[in-house]
Image (tube, protein in one colour):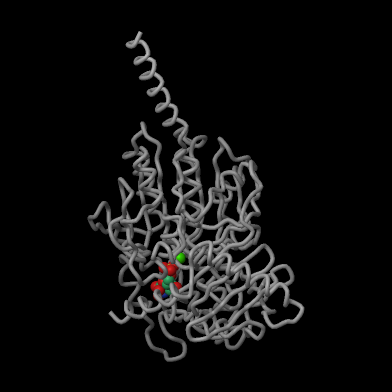
Length: 520
Ligand code: SGN
Ligand code: CA
């Protein structure tokens, strides 16, 4: 009798664990660097075509209100891994260290039986924790002939970083994947990060096309605050002749630009292809002798074309990975997410780069497919943040979500099983003074309004009505018509700061740490 029940219990335990193993989905988390939602064709902006990324939305969900909590690379990745705001996980800017010893969702999946891998850009110093396999770029990494730190050893791989990252990913899937375990794969591209050096096969893509500048490309920031006026990220103003526009000679001084130096990293063959593609374009530019607005439009076109070219290879890679899943019967039970570490300005307000809480850099593309649960073609309009990835993945994997995670699982939202969701998001930005000179700020955004406070060397508030002014051209903080809204938004901001545990004291602490770290 006892023997029989022991056998029964044993049988049930085995059955349960087998079931869990088979029901736990695989997760492919694809992230690119600085990929603006405006440059994902599924968002309908008509700039470029990204059929493979779009396929994720066609067969799954597209998020129209996906946001980050801090629009800069390494902090965004720290938020994504920990599910906690920057001021809680400690990685507030690109300068201060990240503590890998703290919990992250990869560690939790790994300890519950997932096989885990991290491939590509992570931008967090120190040995990655939570991954059985990692092959990461040191820091920002190089576009051509990049070094990778593979499980601790540095190797240099010849070629372009985007297809190489894809190849390492496919190699891992083909040769290292343990078929008896569910897997978590972080496939993280460097592109389309500055300085937008494309793969050889796309060097002349868009050559026959002229892109229109955004309507506010020649913005003079009249309706905005001091922070917008004092940034250093204008395409026509701060972008550089060599580094950004790929001219070999500075048209103003006639001197050689630093792009000559950058080309030295390329092999002879790679360099020849680059020179063959860019020399005629650069000659034509010199002959045209442009000035004023015409020059501004030329700069925008050189910028946007290089930027979009690098995205084409990212999209190709997504296609290859999706194809591998199809061919290996993995599509049904694999969650695929495509996102970026933040948004980016594609000439809006005249800018490149990110950092600001204004829409183009606050928003980020999010597309997600999971045929088992997500209906194809659904659109999500809830305010989702990168803070929510960790709890969402844990939820799908059936692992308890630790209480101290600050995001929320959006599984219930995509499944339409609960209408309860946040109606405001909180944002912080710290890296100042620094490249691009975007001042320190924090703020709250609801569906319609955004309140921001810029501090440290100024003390200014900005309020935008996103319904009336989606391009954020007019700060209405001092407009008497908005007095009530302004007060309400102040209340919301206090609520947010209390809820997440942020304060002026923390801002001061991180400021001091930043200034000390910069001195070193
Ligand atoms: C580099 C870029 C900047 C960019 C930061 C942060 N300059 O410094 O334009 O804002 O990275 O980007 S570059 O000379 O290297 O091109 S982040 O995505 O890593 O946060
Ligand atoms: Ca980035």
